[in-house]
Amino acid sequence: MGVSRTDVINIPKNVGAAKTTTYNWEGSNYPLKIDNTVAKLVTEIINVSEASPDKSYTSVIMSGKSSSGKSTLTQTLCHRLSCAQKIKWNIKWFDRNNLLDLGKIIDSLEKGLRYILIFDDVSYVLDSEQVKPKQKQELAAKLTYIRHDLGGKVITIMNIHFMTALMPIFRDADFKILTSMSYVDRKNWSGILGKQADYQLNTFQKQYASQMKNHYFYVNGVKREDGKGYAYYVNKPFRCALVSEMEGVRTLLYPKEGCEVCAKKKEKTQTRKEIPASDYFKKAIRKYPATARTAIRYWAYFTLGRKDALPKNNKASIQHIMKVAQEYAVDEDSLIEYIRGTHHHNPIKIPDGTL
Ligand SMILES: [Zn+2]
Image (cartoon, protein in one colour):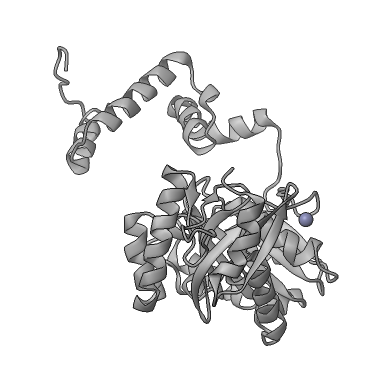
């Protein structure tokens, strides 16, 4: 689609200053600037890791909304960093429940090996008000000494949605990668990456929007023989991201790569004891049996995303509530005050009739 052999042959010659290469996918060669390759990023990550002082680890933070490619890019990076290299790394995927248990995770890992530790979807943990400043400090301290504690090279990859309040330890990540960007994100990233990144942020915003709307995007300087922009079709084979590393900000074109070894597998960290479902249920409702039966259904619905946890009528009512929430706006504080008024111990008369 949109890529002919003539295109491929002609583009690199056309570009002039920027050196180009090609990526072979399903039997065809796709052109891209060397600056935009995963290979360049991987070389940089390895160089930083090799050059880093004994106590330091190499950190990658990846930010973007759900389904914008964070997991895909994470696996592509792991595949290139380890599977495709002579020196192998131990690749460990953790989820958001694990990050605060970092100390226990470190204790459970064999010492003296190379690790890539991936924490997928951790913005909830880092942003949540339930996580106390002290816990965040402890986490930052654990991360600071992770290389020392594990006694081998460590690369961490943390995947987040956008956060307005990045903890300094993440703000200082060696590599920051954006897989999506909204208008609001753009302003925030300008604050984090500095004004000098504005041009690239603007470019990425256009590329990302085009990727979503048109399913293709352009990269500055990559042209067809007739001088028109060369269109990259999404996932055929690349998606577009923005990389910020020590020396600047640039476009990254990443394909989907991977194998069994680097595939996302949930690591058991043995921080929580697994118990039978019936025991779990009993423990959960024991303290407040009258109300907890309903509460645990909603907990499963919202926290675990299990729609089948709710009886039919509750499901219908919550879906209706969500529909109203989509259609109308409301002053949150007034609504909460009103809801509190409907609590049993604090009854107010609810107006009758149709609304
Ligand atoms: Zn692999």
